[in-house]
Length: 241
Ligand SMILES: Nc1ncnc2c1ncn2[C@@H]1O[C@H](COP(=O)(O)OP(=O)(O)OP(=O)(O)O)[C@@H](O)[C@H]1O
Ligand SMILES: [Mg+2]
Image 1 (cartoon, helix red, strand yellow):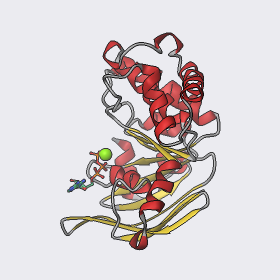
Image 2 (cartoon, helix red, strand yellow):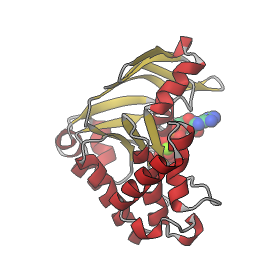
Image 3 (cartoon, rainbow, N blue to C red):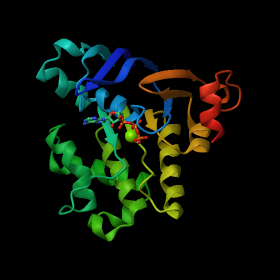
């Protein structure tokens, strides 16, 4: 479904991804864990080409690309098949909740206003915000805003949703409601790549966990292998914390 092969990324001559290979199957929930500055966000951002790798290949559904010969059309195709949920929700402040969820559907998918609205309502119901459709982001809690951004991601029916620490900007008491929604999305069969520091959550929902350190995937496997049965010192030391 999604494959990355020998991915390399440098910033100003400093290589931060040093040959990443990753396979994500349809319906997988793959969690990326690891210390700060290790390249987790950079890796996610390569999947929709927000970051330009110096080398590597990507396959996503029917797209197969070499990053060194990528064209503008390819970038658009990649972005049509992915949706990203950021730490800082990134909602339009001057648009209502439902307008936020309609925007990409109309601009990227060229849906009519009516279609986008109906799909928007459907997805907002799934995240429990049907009574907030006409509110503005500033009228919502952080947890509710993040649920809007999840509805927005679902609404474009991507092949894969990329979550980058979706709960780390939230007050502790709001984390649970967002994790519950993500768990629900995972159970619906959506393919997910998730960067998280919520270890027990990663352990619970992932089909696969990849532990990254210093620009490399050190170890990957089922949650039980990474969190309880790892034989690698670096992994053991990280998950112990
Ligand atoms: N635009 C950029 N320009 C220069 N360096 C960058 C840029 N983006 C990231 N880096 C560097 O690349 C490395 C990897 O960063 P990245 O944000 O991917 O780490 P991370 O694993 O997501 O960390 P965290 O857990 O703190 O979010 C870091 O050393 C970071 O400083
Ligand atoms: Mg990050």
